Amino acid sequence: MFRRDCGATSGFSTQVSVLTPNEKPSGSGNAFVADDDHGAATVGDWGGPWAEIRWLTGDHLLVRYAADSRIFEQEEQVSGVKISYEQADR
Image (cartoon, rainbow, N blue to C red):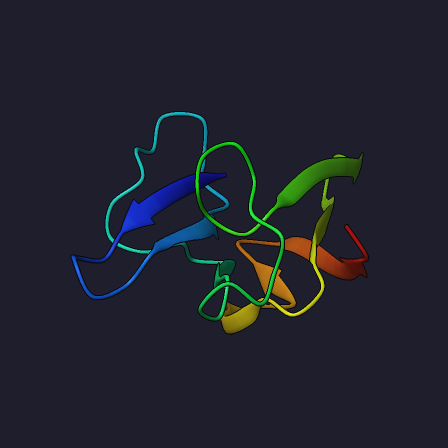
């Protein structure tokens, strides 16, 4: 999980990528990308919308994110990893 700053006219986004152990992130998240929709969603300490990730099993990831986040990317599977999503009222 990481954040991106998309410039002066927008806030930080929260992004999630699923990578192999030797892979380095590049570009946007390949699993999840969201922003706070101009202040509608609760933000985390990093400035993007609040989110947390947790491995349920070795090939199943749970992404919890702030309700009212504006979602740009929300993949159900990346590189053989199933991804579940859950909105959280924060």
